[in-house]
Amino acid sequence: MGNNHSSSSRVNRHNNGAMKLRNKKSKQQLMEREENKESAKLKFHLPKNDQDIDRMQLQHFLFKHIWDDKNYSSPIEQRLKSGDCKVLDAGCGPGAWLLEMSTQHPSTRFHGVDIAAVFPSEIKPTNLNFHQCDINQGLPFKDNYFDFVRMSLMSTSLKINQWVNVIRELVRVLKPGGYLELIESGVQVYNAGPHFTFMVKNIISFKNSNELSVYITNQIPSILSSIPSLTDIQSDFRVIPIGPLGGQSGLIYGDLLDMYFTNKLKDVLPKCMNITEKEYLDLWDRCQLEFKIHAATTKLFRFWAQKVVVTDDDDDDDDENIEEGVGIDQLIN
Image (cartoon, rainbow, N blue to C red; front, side, top):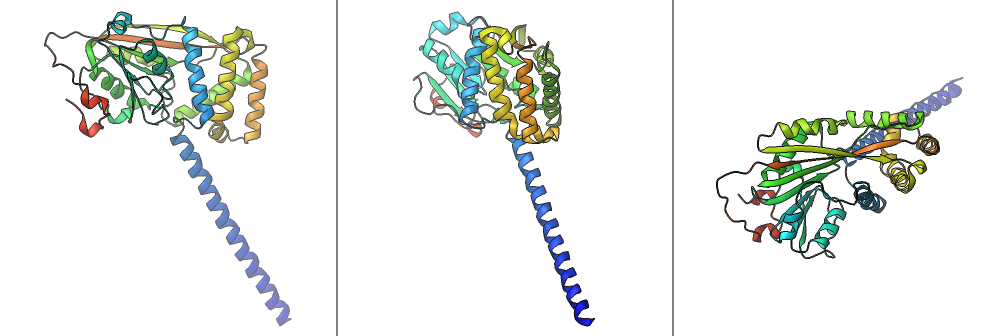
């Protein structure tokens, strides 16, 4: 009896110890999963890998084609040809727009800034310079420096409360008489099937949970109008077809979405939807089938405005420090 009781006690202690160890491991694994989930959310706006960079580059050429092969809507063509022009692309990513523009306009000086150094560091035109910086912390350029400033597709990078300050910073470095242009794609989809509609709703939910502005294309006009130094505010949009029913452009955009959903979103969206990765990919496969029977579309927007011309003469620009890529702590006034 005593031996049996002692043996039973040892078994119970062993089972309790094993259960505590399993619970501890489960808690650790849960904490690690949550940390990975939060880390993925925090880094969501950064390029994930080479495939993500390839997608961004291909997207540039498709969006240019959809916009009648025009790289901008602002009336700046004569300035670009004049040889006395400076251009900034804020949030330039891998620099596809800048590489094309700087090649076409060798007399214009181009600058690109991005928080991630995924842009080319060596093989680039001599009139193009890249700088790594966080635009939320300010730009390393003095006031009234650029003739044209653009910012493209930042809705997954800027939080709701950051947009006004960032746009004001873009206006700060813009010369009086210069143009600011913002490019954003709409989150709304039209004539989509039920599975893709469901997927888009979950993207909206993910953006909301990360304090990203879901409907920024509706808000940009009012933000621009709230800045006294901006005038002649204009906007336009183009329809982007999705899938084979939209011809060659639809096929290309369908491929871009496939890269986006199976590469970029795969780390974050299934967790937000509380489904497995396999269930998520199966759902995306059903979305692709829908594109063959639903002529789904979305929209690409451009907004542009001119900075009010002032009467006071500005000091001549000094390029020397700008070319060295000064930090924000060395901001040229």
